[in-house]
Length: 420
Ligand code: ATP
Ligand code: MG
Image (cartoon, rainbow, N blue to C red; front, side, top):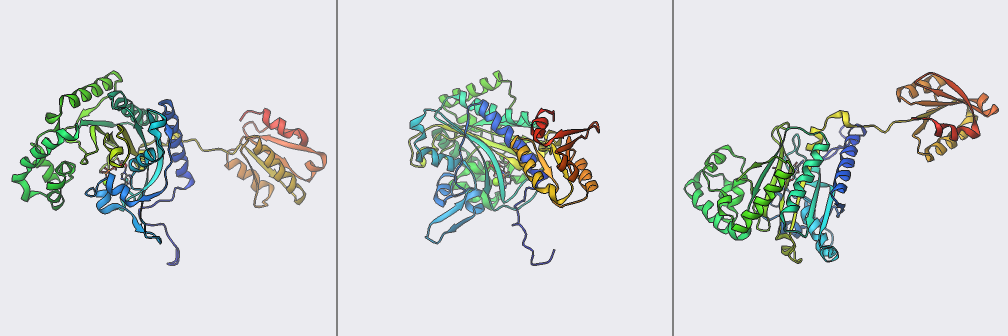
């Protein structure tokens, strides 16, 4: 490759045919299972006003503080490539008054996202997520349904070694007390904290619990648990979520450190991790965000959802599940005069939903048969000058080796009657 060759941007990937089969089969499964649960697809634009994310995701998060692809366009508007989906879906929910049309809105998405992170295995700058957002119910049934849906998709993909980590972060009111308790606990350790955590200490101490620094994890071992600060209503809600998960035979691990730093997050939070992924082990994060629509200027509406990283899910999917779209018929042809008949015949067969190929390189008979064999086709139709003159085509069954003459005007009917 010379240095004039243009390459893809660091952290982005081309998904070539061998890989895209896997993507399609993952997407098919997502669409199938979400439809069993009554979810409908929502598609939102690739970019939004920057303030949508700074307001909803939060200024002090990694995403907003350092990962967004943002720019000012020629008209002076501040725009950002979507770094996550919940904000866009909530914006669309408010903008189109979906809550007024239906009391419950169950939406799913499959989309590309952009974050300027350090690229590594399972971490890219353009990546993909599927996820759901369910608006309208504050009751624990929907929390359990959303978790069950995520698990059910992963199970249907044959993923093993998954863990569901679960917590409740209660309501904003109880978090005020927890926040104070956490600050009190951390104060004597302030000088040992990383610079990032020191910054978070005043604005958003809950986010310190997210730390990946091992010495901080150690300090936090004795930190107070949010579960001791839940109100009675929050505790009842969480107990009910847990009861439903037990009824659905979904295993979980209670993780008192699993929190989200922003005020519009409420009650249930969860994540699903895989022990087969190494460092980037989270495949799915989710939770309740009862305060989000109001914060974005809409009517207060409870909501809960999850987002799963598709690249990481694909790393875990075993190859045997992928079915390539196979060529079923190869038309082998010889001679200039046959070309018009061949192109028309291929079109007619394709219109009958039969996957058909013919030679585009004007190769020899032997080379075409070799190609058909390589494609593992079931049948070849052979047309040469002789066949054209007599209107009798040869149909070769690749499995048995049998060859049969079929009249040109009966060929579509004949091919349709065969089993593929
Ligand atoms: P992490 O701690 O791995 O950075 P996160 O908290 O930023 O994850 P979320 O914003 O909750 O992740 O996104 C949900 C899922 O999307 C993650 O669990 C992960 O599977 C996937 N994901 C997040 N960032 C990336 C990325 N840069 N490349 C690939 N997948 C990603
Ligand atoms: Mg991240």
